[in-house]
Image (cartoon, rainbow, N blue to C red; front, side, top):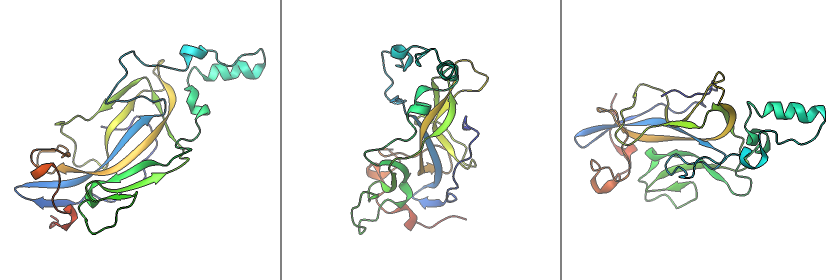
Length: 213
């Protein structure tokens, strides 16, 4: 899957292959695009999407000044929180990177940026969003979906939109990046609770296994 935005992703470390048991595993760089308007792809609202326009109408800037007119014209192609949410996580840091390949080191002291069961994390406060055209729909990679193991990045969730789509607007997103395990032979993600992993998680630190060339 390719990102809808033309912005390039920050460079990530190259994937590594491991030999574990009778199947091969590799790490894959992943990205999640999260809208800043409190939408969820895993638990969508049953009452439908709730937009700023439902309360503030399509002309939210009141007044007869020329500036009000131009601001209202901007709302035809720019989501309200593109301007009104210049940063997110202003009060508490939010997780922006999650490296599952670092999991398994029980000797490492517990810290907010590390969990031996989940790996290493990076957090950020007052983070700037990334922007993409968004028409209200997203593409998702579901459990069991095959992925392109040769792709530099796999978008687990990505916005669907286009400048040529009249329903799309420039929208701010939180971009969550990470390194996640994938089956190197069959091309699907391995997740916590996957039956191919004994006990539902890696019993040893994956990076301790012999890497394949």
